[in-house]
Length: 181
Image 1 (cartoon, rainbow, N blue to C red):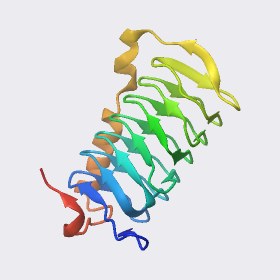
Image 2 (image 1 turned 120 degrees about the vertical axis):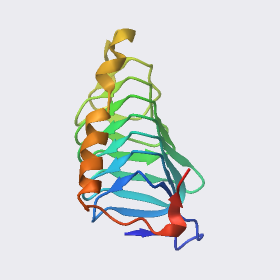
Image 3 (image 1 turned 45 degrees about the vertical axis):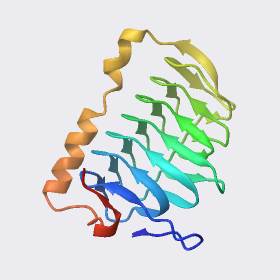
């Protein structure tokens, strides 16, 4: 289901290459970049605040994105949001990062670029780039080498989602919400 916000009438803006599974819910002020894939059970509620999702990002099963009124939940490019994670804005996830299974990024949380938030962890603060964070609350466990960037690729998720799309799976994005450029 892809709908405008019942509170303020804002509408999603979704790139035409995006794959959206059949039962995904997208509401209101949500912008989704090219080749992003959103899998079964995910909820993106831009009914109060804004949600921005970059290109080549994978939003896996049962992920929840939401934000406080007049705040932004910003997900970078080539990000992996693993199964059942939750991000509540205002929050930022840097490019090429991974949020592990059942992890949460709370209001004010910022995961640096090329970083990982381990499964089950809870992030409330700002973090550095190229680091692994884990725990409740999440703390830095290690630093990554800068040449590790290629390990953060989301290409397999993009390829898989495009196969689903080509086979006729996924929601048809209403014309009024499409970005075609």
